Length: 153
Image (cartoon, rainbow, N blue to C red):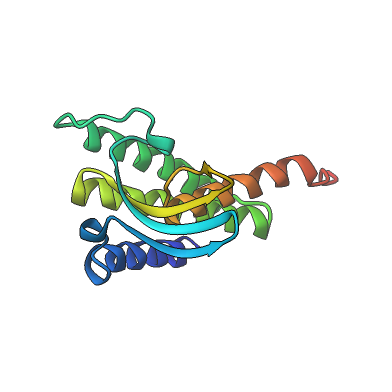
């Protein structure tokens, strides 16, 4: 799962940067159905999730990449002990997403975000495939923690 998500993330970022040239276009509407919309919108995220801890100092992107790498390492160790397939897939999604964003930080000094969903005048944060994998993986881990029946000793 980690490799699939990482490949999809990096391929999509290459396409928006080099194939579509979204940095020049800035915004491309994809779907507009009544109050719902989906656009490709170029955003360079210098912070972490939702732009938190944003900064453009000389070491900011390296520090954030190192923190993300440490978290990915912890999750990889957890993956080796995963009790269920769901947990293993969820951890793989989080790890693949984290590595995808680490690659961006090291290459560009920021994360490439480009998916913008909006409805009824409300905008979600602009995100990427890695972010979606991280969020879905965390939701699956939370669901597993809440819903899984304890194993018998």
